[in-house]
Image (tube, rainbow, N blue to C red; front, side, top):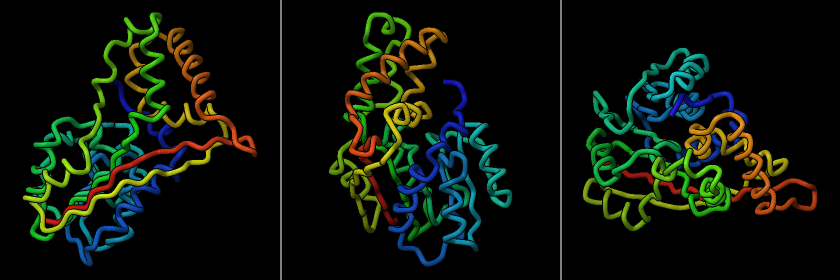
Length: 256
């Protein structure tokens, strides 16, 4: 896929940062020498880490040049570099590896999560938050519109870009042999947005990308029109005209 659009992503910065703050609140570390924000995006989650652990050496990694540019402008005192999360190893071992809304894009968690645990210093914490929303109307309707004849041949198997994450039980069994403690929970946020097109704008920055990128501009406009119409039916306006977007997320805090 082409580069991420940091400006589009940041249109809902407060809503996207809230789960990162909730995740960091469950990290029971008093001091951190070395912290890594993997999939740091535009630095909104990295900023939380810097504020919580001001004496730590904090670095952020991401694959997106646009996201990294925004992160460096936001936090000029932090080291940001381009790197692939799927092959990441902390050098030196980290006291905190923080992964907010990134690992759902990375395959093979059976190998990835133990490797991340191995990158922790003794007593270090792996803190992960992942959207768990592929069965929500917002994402089911992406696939439904993509399957329509006028789009199917061009879009192909966009579902392969992001597959369902394992269950809570599977993550527990995967992490427990490598951890002294594993804390897992699932929360559904209820985001109040202005209208159905705002939901479309939200997902255009993330989940819609693999569906839109194969399309030429006229096809893209047609896909967005069909998708927006379905979103409007699935998320009807409330008494004040606004809509509510339920957004399930899975949280994991594992201490080595």
